[in-house]
Length: 239
Ligand code: ADP
Ligand code: MG
Image 1: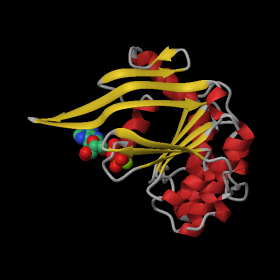
Image 2: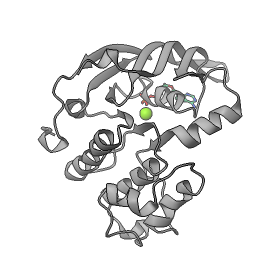
Image 3: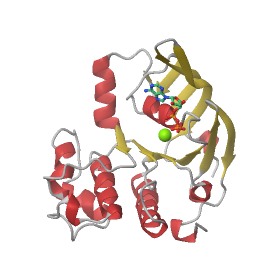
């Protein structure tokens, strides 16, 4: 696959993000240059504190860069109004976090419906839950589901609005390897079947073998980008 010839979804130029805490300045991102392409599956690697979550939050419009350019297709996210940014988050981006953030008093189906109720062209909650292999668990509450199943509900919730982009921050961080592999299979399937541009943060370098590209952050900068000509299925990963 000739990745660089594909349409660019995100273009970042010299992106910085500085946090000020009293007198202390933390430079979480120190000049990130990066392009993400339509339909690709990228894994973001890097030590704790290297800026991975900060970068993902900026891509998803949860946070803004301190300087530099963050372009999503034709939209300059850095210059966008709050309204445009909200619209971007709501309709174009799905988020998956380490701790599933499900509402305990709602069933799997109801947790997904929260999002589909405000989306423009959503799947049905049942359809989204079937995609992640939970068609038998529609009426279960989070407490009646395993960690891996809860994460799959969270993925169903993220993809049910048919987002162009799926951003996952350590989605397998709280799971054992067998369950983590099942979750990664779901992410790979969604990328392949729906063409959702997918970025996954992980500590586990092995996971890069299932991605089209690996992007490594070191100290707030991109230190390495590697194409993977032959991504494997998660079940093939040597965990
Ligand atoms: P990673 O996800 O790679 O572990 P982060 O992007 O979370 O790294 O953090 C990068 C750096 O920025 C760290 O030093 C972290 O403490 C700091 N940081 C992140 N978010 C904030 C924040 N909201 N306020 C202050 N410092 C932050
Ligand atoms: Mg993080």
